[in-house]
Structures are given as C-alpha cells and as structure tokens.
Length: 333
Image 1 (tube, rainbow, N blue to C red):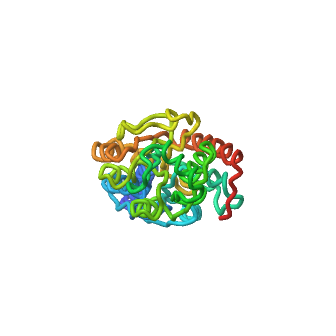
Image 2 (image 1 turned 135 degrees about the vertical axis):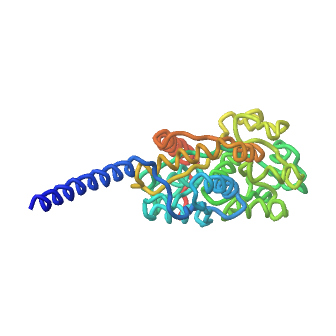
C-alpha cells in the first residue's frame, strides 16, 4: 500500500514537471521571433526588366539567405500595378505573399482612378520603403534634340508628332509627361505600356522618341549610349550623371516625379511577422552587396518603421491627389 501511494506521488510530481516544461517551451516559442517555414512570394505588379523588378530581385536574393527560405519574385503586370496589388490584397495575411509596388501603384492610382479593387490604406500592412529613385527624361539617340529646349522647339514645330512612352496610363511617369506638356505648352503623344521595361525597349528601338523613366532601369542604357538623358525630373541633379541638369534648373521649380518602391503585406498580417520582415529588409539593404548594387543603378536606400511608412504613403496620396485635380486626369481601370 505504501509503495503504491509512493508511486502515485512520483507520477503526480513527474506530471507537474512535464506540464511546467511544456508551458515554459510554449512561452519561449511565443517570445521567439517569427521565421518563415516555406518560400515567400514577392509580387511585383509590373513586367520583368523594369526598375521595380530589378530592385526586387536584388532584395529577394539577399532575403533568401537571411530568412533561410527561398524568396521568389512573381511578376503580375497590368492595369498600372492594380492586378498584382489586388492579388496581394486578397492573399492570406501570413507573411508568405508580399507586394513590392511603386508610388504609382499605392499613391497615384487612388488619385487617377475613380474605381479600384483595392484600397492602399485599408487593404495593406506597410512594412518599409526600400529605395527611392530619380526619374529621368530620355530620348532615343536618333532623335535630333540634345537638350530639353531643343525638344520643346521640335514639339512646337510638329504638334503631336513626337511620341513619348510610359510605364502605364496614370503612372507617375505618365503624370511627369502631363506636367511637362502643360508647363512647356507643347503637344506630345502619349503611348502607355505594361511596365517600364517594354517601354524602354521601344524607345531604344525608335518606336517612340522618348519617355520619363526611373533611373535604375535607364542607367545601363544611358552609359552604353543607347539612350540620351536630357533632364532629371526633379529638384536636383543625380551623382550618377552629374552633367544632366534638373528640371528645376531648367525653369520648372515644382517639377518632381521622384519614384519610390516599398514592401507591403496584406492587411491583418500579425505585427511580429511585419516586424521580422522590416528587420530583415533593413539588414538586406544595409549589406554591401545590395547597397552597392542599388548605388550602381542610381537608387537610394530608403527604409523606415512600418508606422512611419504608413504615414508617408498617406502624405504621398494627398500630394498626387492635388496634382491630379489640377490637371483633371481621370482614368478607367
């Protein structure tokens, strides 16, 4: 009898120890930072070869090592980024489907489209901006204009004959053209494409005479002489091409089409996942191989907390709403 009672006591104590150990393990697991257990998909809502795609692929390669899981870029082009954005807005908020859009997708689309299938504030959890990039005005080398002044003279002499491509109707590159046409008092024909990559290809080939585009996609072609840079579409020159004047220098003091790319998760993604992604992206862009690669193509690293990024997106939406209202640009999706 005494032995039986003794054994029951031993079993009870062992059970208590097991429960305590299990509780301690669960508490430790809850405190441990989130780590992915399967591949992560980063949706780029533009065609391959464009600046967003280039930026995302450099980042994904580094993140693959930091997160110990493949980080794969998935291009879903169309409707000025809205097809890819809608896909991510409806994805499960578990950290495995992310969106890397541009300021066009998140800040300009709400201003130029009356109806959209997603809301950039309601449907997404901001993670962090990644880079900012100057926008350049370029022309094909066979085009006779070597300066903005000469381009304006040609456009005035031949109204509507000069063709400028863009990455899509309603994109910041399209709006840069609208600003230029209005402020210079000229008529240039606009042809929208499904991303900057195919647009640049046609400008190089002479199917269009010029375009505004992000510096990261233009840099190798300008260096190789396959495109001629006429101006930086902003306030300052870029160290990448210090000989190219800014639009402000040329007499357009409010002309600023600077682009940014950032990372977003679907709304409802747990904060610990958002913070782990934020931390990992910061580590990735701080690494010499990513930072230097971005510098080589003219992009500037630009990171922040999720809260700061969310506030920044709201200010950008307000800024572009003001521009769109001024020029009365409304598009159908």
